[in-house]
Image (cartoon, rainbow, N blue to C red; front, side):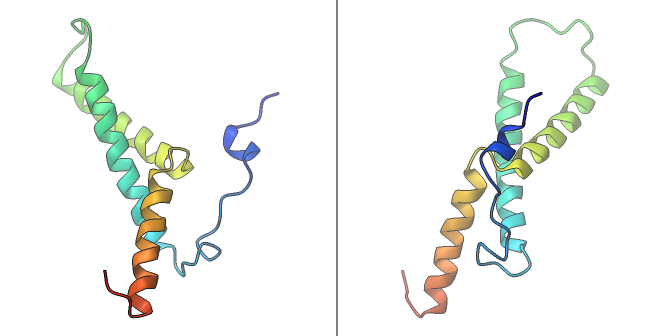
Amino acid sequence: MTTPISSSLGPTPTPAAAGGGDGSLRKAAEAFEAVILRQLMASMRQAKLGDDIFGSSASDNFREMADARTADSMASLRQFGIADMVEAQLRGRIAGAGTGGAR
């Protein structure tokens, strides 16, 4: 039996443990990562090597919706690290603004 990679790496910090209250910063960082992943997947779809024999606007729409859902799921796993970096950078700015430090 195999175990998922995310469970073998250890627990991810909860928003409260990461210094957040309601987790809105974490959600925003995950949403940003999902946007980046959607753009990445759209670029990969454009680089198709042949004609799609079943191609239609309906199948394209469903494919885009599936890609969006996949990107959201991938972002929620936080395996790429984009959301973690964005969250850490924004937390640093919030902490700097809270102590009176200006950049």
